[in-house]
Length: 117
Image (cartoon, rainbow, N blue to C red; front, top):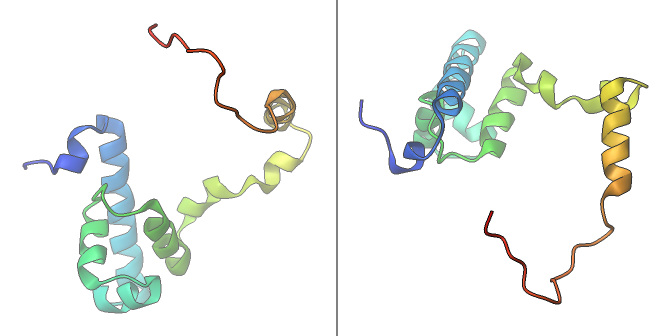
């Protein structure tokens, strides 16, 4: 199947994840008894966006994918639940250390930066 121009630059695992997410959204929609038009109305997009989403199209904004997943009650949102990271875990501590090292703001360098690696 020919790939879209947006899909060409994506690594294979990312393309596959989008297709998997699209299939999950399609299955969730059918399980809830929603038509594509009904899901589109609830998400706030056109029906063709839902069609593209169910195919895993990368040009559909991630916000729309996540909104559809939330509306359908899909478990894909579990990875966005950072409440567990507030507990004293190694990951939480690592994130705190990173945050402490970050500057408050990023400024334009006063001298040229050599970004040739």
